[in-house]
Length: 190
Image (cartoon, rainbow, N blue to C red):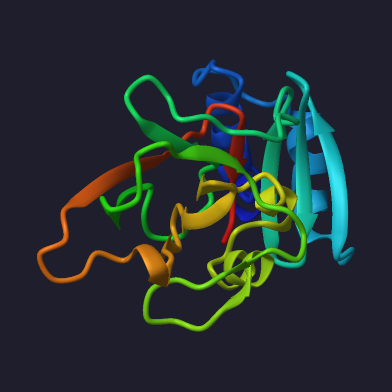
């Protein structure tokens, strides 16, 4: 019987990492609630977990969100790395190369509803549509950082650089590094 309902394990492991205690385990009653939550037919739901963590579901995606993940602005860290939630399917970090004709006075902010982005060699679409297509969970799309110059979006971590700042030919390049940061949020399924 125990081996039949192991859906809680992925949640338990991510939860333990999220609260900073990888050795912790959920109590058996809570494990059953997590399994019921994962198997329920509700499209959207939330289940509170210990450590001020919430388990969210939207469709087939499951997401853990910890306390303090209400910060709407991300910053470039001391290592010049833009931090993003841990939400992409196949990669956790990357480099965004922009033409150095753009002065290096970049700022990082969250995107606003309706804002559009045109990655190099692609068409212009709303950022929310790009993030949905990339598999970013609805619970964190609104928190996704964008890199701007003079409040014009020049790059989006995980999506690429804008067509107008794409390096061409012998143009000098500035590399902006980004990295998924999973201390406050964990996507369980994709």
